[in-house]
Amino acid sequence: WWGGLQNNGSLMIITAYLLKYSFQWRNAEIIIKMVVKSEEAKEESEANLKRILEDIRVPFGHEIQVINKNQTFWDVINQKSNADLTLMGMAAPAENFHEYYHNLVERTNAVGTVAFILAAQEIDFKKVLT
Image (cartoon, rainbow, N blue to C red):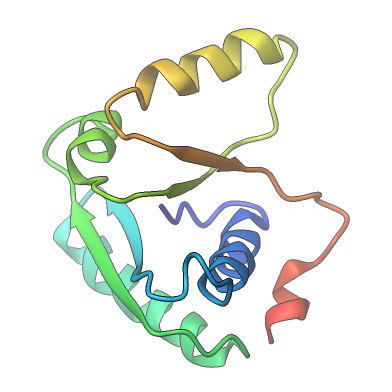
């Protein structure tokens, strides 16, 4: 699930690439999903994601699904995540990490196996990809 914040998206691409080229995940299909608020944002986001993915040096096949939400963000995530493994970026937690993480787990309980990704902000993962 691409959020476009910080470097999490780039780190998720690197993680998916590494998984795809492991023996156990070699036949995995990678789908990059994003939730937006309007049809205009959907078209713009699809174009941006395509441009980003064309520019990277990671040659894995992928599909893009930009979803115009008419529900809450978390309802969309729970309904549209039908994968063996879901990668989701997370914000750097504020003061109460335990509560923040508990809320993430609670909100994604219908998703299945989730790897929450938080990139180190001092590393420019975008430069690794391009």
